[in-house]
Amino acid sequence: YSATWKQWLQGTLIVRRSGTSGNPRVAYEVIADVGRRRQLRKAVPLNALRRAMQRGESVEVLSSGAQAWLPGVIADDAARRFPGMGYMVDIGTEEVRLPRHFVRRRYDHGVEVR
Image 1 (cartoon, helix red, strand yellow):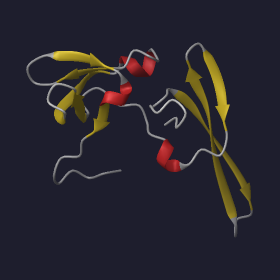
Image 2 (cartoon, helix red, strand yellow; image 1 turned 90 degrees about the vertical axis):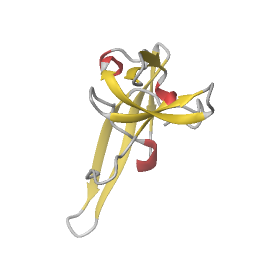
Image 3 (tube, helix red, strand yellow; image 1 turned 30 degrees about the horizontal axis):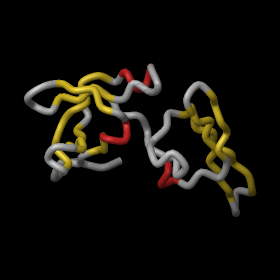
Image 4 (cartoon, one colour; image 1 turned 30 degrees about the vertical axis):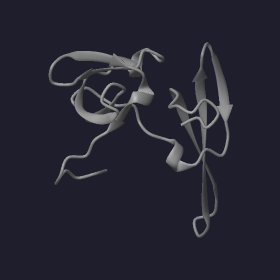
């Protein structure tokens, strides 16, 4: 998640390990796709990372008309292959393409979260 752009960005995660076995250290860096450029972001906190959503995954989509989050399912994982395209989401009545920041994961009752 980019605080500057206030949206999720596509990127490549780099995990840096250091320290000793008794005192391990881990740091996360991301090469973020920002427009047509790639930028290195250092010391990225875990709460700013998420894996790309995949076909069949349960989600919620922000409905500007209803001013609410509505249930849906990822219909196509093209966002993983083509950054900037967003996600194709099946919302029950139709499939719509939405920007990444209009889509969030939904965890149904009883589903194991990993």
